[in-house]
Amino acid sequence: MSKTKTLFIIDDDEDDQLFINEAMKDLKIPFECFYANNGESALKHLKEGTVPLPDFIFLDLNMPKLNGKECLIEIKKLPQYSTVPLIIYTTSSNQKDKQEIMQLGAHFFLTKPTRISELCVCLNNVFSMDWKQVAG
Image (cartoon, rainbow, N blue to C red):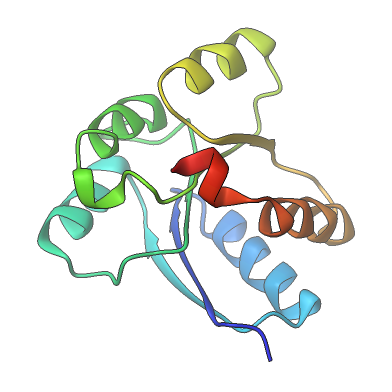
């Protein structure tokens, strides 16, 4: 049996949060999700340790209070999360956004798919990567 994956999803859109949740169920991968609706809330949870150390952080770019780019910069300053794969999960497919985000330290850039089957393929790809080499 697979190890339970712990995901921290930082996204102001509840539908997008649920979309990942549904895809994980479809993949039949044991998982536990924790959520934050904006970057400010996410950083508070991470700094205070109110969420367990996640296996993956999924971060939207366009959010109120503290956007994804600003949140990414702040997360990268927290040493306890330095090896956690940080996946940008956004509607943007802009190459300039992608390049800038990757330079800021994101590990993977995922354009939000519109169908659950597409998201399942994307998540399978994310979970099958050798993250020790990428994030370590």
